[in-house]
Image (cartoon, rainbow, N blue to C red):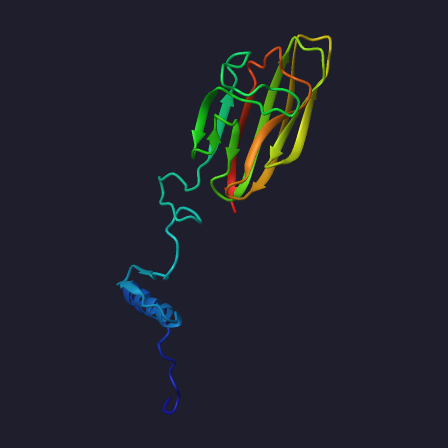
Length: 205
């Protein structure tokens, strides 16, 4: 009918062939996008590249099959009871050392100081298991965030030859935050073989 405005771009008709209908739909989608130029594969699909969009695979942009960025984990154990020469004595409020490092992904664990230093900002999980041997006094072990005791565990049964102070915690850390174990009460003069300290990054922030 004369005088009637036809919409542009025209809507595809059911009578149109499939390739032509797909092409028209692709053109409509392209015109609806402001500031982007669609790449048209005729009769098959439309691919629109959005500036600044991360690569597929996650928020960090890791491609499929690649290791995610910010992978951090450590595990250390005590392989003998008594301290070798050069280690600081474990007394009241003394640091607890671990001589064998099993995992140190990301390089955050320092065996010399027995502490973990966060390389990236994120939420971390920590767990410790400190064994006292032939020791009838109460032992209190605290997990320290820098100089602040976060959680503590006790081993205080006088009738067992081996007992462990065990605990775990989740912590949000900033780069450079230091996590370590300290004796807040008692001593480990009988040794602490089979003790362990571990942690890992759950997700970055």
